[in-house]
Length: 127
Image 1 (tube, rainbow, N blue to C red):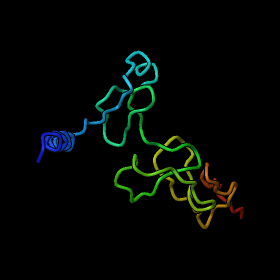
Image 2: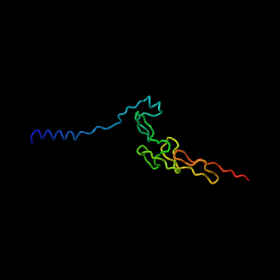
Image 3: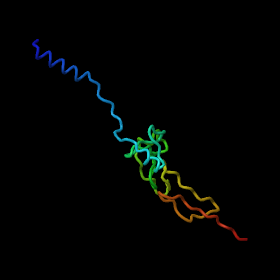
Image 4: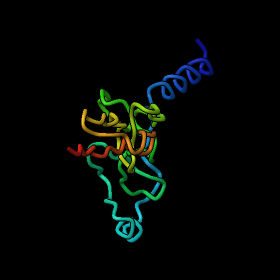
């Protein structure tokens, strides 16, 4: 084997043997901005992720959307629309909740929507 082949093999082994750099968030936290937004600095708590400003934010969904209750890590699942007349999310929260069912002595004042629960009102019997 000549010297050129040995040099080529050596270079090839060096490149293969070099560990790849660990990728970390390139976003630098902005302490002033994080505190103004009421958000913490990394490391983040469970069910939080780092936003574009480098602050920790909860992995919550907007009104009318939510994640499956069975999810282990809400940060790994996308928000999906709640199911009309079955589930709702009226706040900035993680999950869609089941719609309330009115009782036997109640009437429905407002049907459940994806962003608001059923509104029930008591029926009064006059004798």
